[in-house]
Amino acid sequence: MIERADVIVLGAGIVGISTAIHLQERGRSVLLVERRAPGEETSYGNAGVIERESLVPVTVPRRLSDLIPFALNRKVAAHYRLADLPRFLPWLNSLSRNSAPAAVDRYAAASDALSREAAREHHRLAGPSGVEPLFRKTGWLRLFRSPQSFAAAQTAHLARAKRYALPFDILTPEEAGDIEPHLSPAFYRAVLWPETESVASPGRVTKSYAEHFVGIGGHYMKTEARAIRPLSDGGFEIETGGAPLHAGQVVVALGPWSMDLLGPLGYRMPLAPKRGYHRHYRPQGNASLGRPVVDMDNGYAITPMLDGIRITSGIEFADRDAPPTPVQLARAEPLARELFPLGEPVEEKPWMGARPCFPDSLPAIGEAPRHKGLWFNFGHGHLGFTQGPISGRLLAELMTWSSPCVDPAPYSPARF
Image 1 (tube, rainbow, N blue to C red):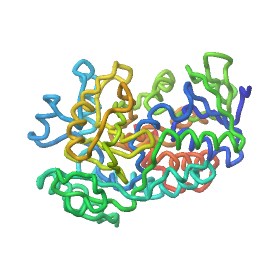
Image 2 (image 1 turned 90 degrees about the vertical axis):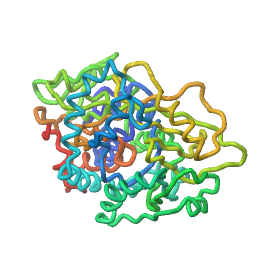
Image 3 (image 1 turned 60 degrees about the vertical axis):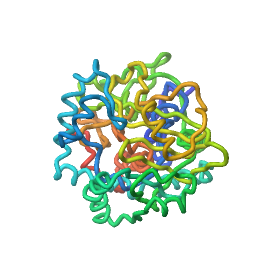
């Protein structure tokens, strides 16, 4: 069993695995460490979408009419546990400041720099990993239930998409029915984003990338990293449940668990968990869905997966480790049934995960400000599956003094 490597990557989600692959390809000996099997945390439970069009971050409502339903905890798109809300208030205040137009412009430019190459980087890994058949190039649909919500989207999202030359098609319910015949016309307009890709199992894709990493000479260890200890003569020791591990460099790619190890080293980064839920349903009869569909008014998605039609919920503000409270999924299910003929649920209980989010909605990619050789790659929020492979490439380029594929400045951990 390997206990020493050039680089130890902590976290075997899509971000950590992609980082490990790129470092291994660049001649480093890499040990990937994860307490569970690869791809079984946040990377397992998302909607499996690879997209560019999220050019406006998920923000705090600014109009009173939008804020009241959130305050009353009646929203489908967002929910909070009252006991946990006080600890989120400073983070939400920072998120509100980052909702200003200039901040949104900065976010859009920085996020698109990663996302515009995301699909290409995924396919560079998908080919040798043997999962190309799981990829769909069918776009996705965003549905708007009212003229008001569609008008707001035209102002906030579609105008910005035009500035970034992103193609989209505005469809009536009848036109949407031509490409999704089992979708009911219970909405005002749909927007088709034809260049978006999706996968039939993000968990299986992530696991296959991990198998590819091992196939090119990388090492994987299933153990829990409990602490990072900088050594006086350089390098790091990782405390685990067994023998300690050693490496000259360490990458923290633990998603919402990253600060558990970085806090003891003195880092105070505003990383918050946005919890989410999913559940699979059997379609009724011969009903089928060819692409992900998002109910933009209510903040949930329905996506065709190998296991059935997956409903993914919006945001829950709650302690990462608090017991599940799948209220949003219960609220979303009848709304989803209005749009698509869902049958019985596949699983007995919903799945729950947590998205790692910073208030500026950008990830932390780069070297730790106070520890040479310690590197960060986490905080991708709602775009972890999209941006995981390209973020792994970017960090590997920084660690090997290569010309970076993307300007890394907006993602610098030193911004906090």
